[in-house]
Image (tube, rainbow, N blue to C red):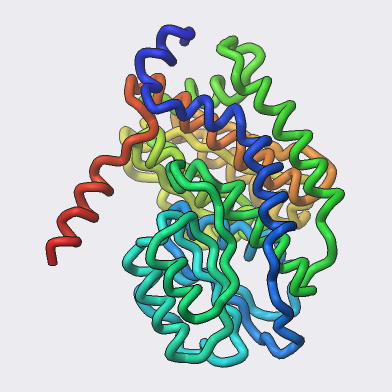
Amino acid sequence: MNESTIERYDKSGMRRLLSGFHSQVEDAVRIGKRTKIPSMGSSIDAIVVTGLGGSAIAGDLLRSYLAPELRIPFIVNRHYFLPHFVGGKSLVIVSSYSGDTEETISAHLDARKRRARGLCISSRGETQRLARKFRQPVITIPRGLPPRAALGYSFFPLLLALVKLKFIPSRDKDIRETVSALERQGRRYNSLDPKRNPALQLAQHLYGKLPIIYSPADRYDAVNLRWRGQLEENGKVLAYGNVVPEMNHNELVGWKVLRRLMGEMAVIFLRDRSDHKRVGLRMDLTKGIVSEFAANATEVWSEGKSGLARMFSLIYLGDWVSFYVAMLNGIDPTPVKVIDYLKWELSKV
């Protein structure tokens, strides 16, 4: 891996976006703090983020991150319509980076029919037009990025909105730690020396293999999903995963018969010091079991003091790993031509 490899394949500049992620987070925080969010009182009894793909993952991460402290249900909806329970006491957060995601627009209209409270986050498009028509607050984020590369813009303004709505206390200290950590990690992951760059090392472990991601179910299930999505969209490889303890009750048994196929799998275990003691033990034992069959099995530990910094340390590492997998595969990580084709065909119907 060298600079000429990057120049040859990273035609659309994904490396530049990754390197500047800490600055994106800083800008996203400024946007979140200056956006006015009217009080909704104490009547909200459920939070629903509705979106797809890169616009939905922020909702998954918020749900997972805030689960230990939120006193009301928080779900992520990925469909044309909302769950039946959504009504006048629900807060529906409509998340569409482009503003024109057809499933999200449909769910937005469904929320309006149900008289749910609304909040929109988007860069432009029909989603913003509807929100203004319905007199709902709008968080406007910069346009021109692949949605998956705009996670800072999708996540942090929503986090700050929930602070303003008094669902959670201030996160200023944790955000400062997260930004500082991302800047340090970015310098490390930008290096093309594998001895100094754990992201490049992991990409080399995954190269030519089928990635399998395992993580604890609490707080890191969404990080697991992010890793898989990034490997698929950036690296252009299929990726699978599951969570512990659930996979100990079914999937673990599947590591048995198809030995030749399993020998083409590379397993990543996402770990955190806050893991439940028994889950940590299960992860240790699971690694020992699958290591007998997989091409390789590697543990990756989060870094940082706060839960926010630790969560984003694993997210950011996974983003860089997916970039280097793309470089090793000799492909530009940014274009997603098959998704563009699918949207074009759907637009005809």
